[in-house]
Image (tube, rainbow, N blue to C red; front, top):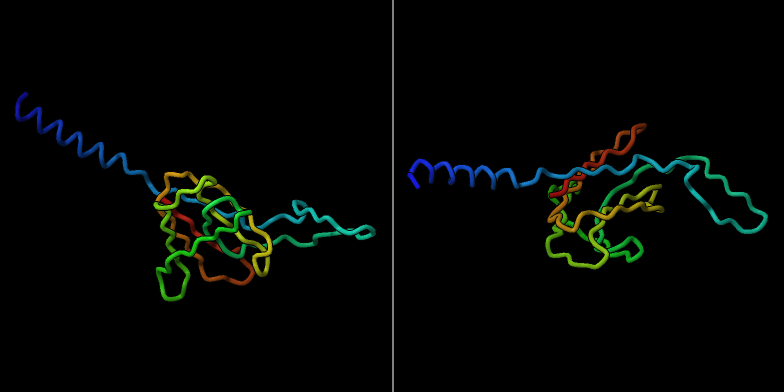
Length: 142
C-alpha cells in the first residue's frame, strides 16, 4: 500500500467518525391540551365541562414511566434557572428515559413521551413567559 493510499484511508476514517456523531434531537411539548381531550369521571348527577385548554407550564425528565413519578433533578446552567441539563447516560431502567410536559397553573396534568435509550443528555430551556403567548420551551437531546 502506498503512502498516498494510507493517507486517503486515514482521512476517510476521520471524516466517517465526524459523520457518525448525530445532530442533537429536538423535541417539542404541545402548547396546550384541548378541553375536548380531557375526560373527567364525575360523581353521579354532575356534568363536567372543561371550558378552557390547559396551557403548557414546564418540562422535565423522568427515569421510568410517568406513573413511577421518578422525576429527575437536572443541573441548572444559568443563575435564573431557565436552562437545565439532564445527564441521562447512567440511567438504566426497564421503562426507559422520559420527557415530561406539565400543564395547568401548577402542573396538574402531565403528558410524557418515552425517549430513545441511547440519549446521553438533554437540555431544557424555558423561555421567559410572555403574557398572551404560548410558553416556549426548547428541548434538545443528544
